Length: 97
Image (cartoon, rainbow, N blue to C red; front, side, top):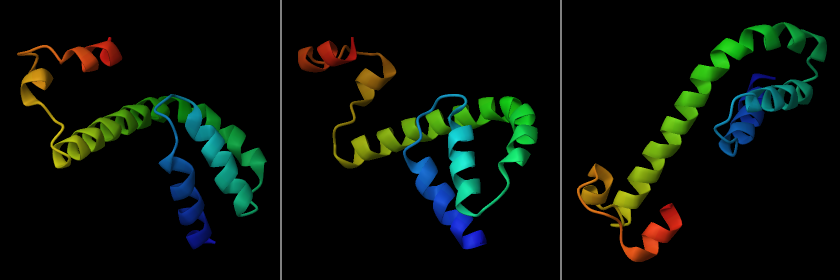
């Protein structure tokens, strides 16, 4: 049962966007996969609003760190553009703005 919860929650959260409230969909999916009564989710919803704000911040921060690491590993990271010293190139400026 614990292995099922770990696998289902990992697969469910890999692609979840950094938005508040998304974790409830993932939670219901994981709990249904192990046969947990969904009546208990009503108790969790009241508490989750407060913790969800922190989870969203961590999710967005993790996405930003991952993007930075990948761009550095691909030699696409420009430190001067990141620091705001220079403007991005024309092609990138159209995408960003």
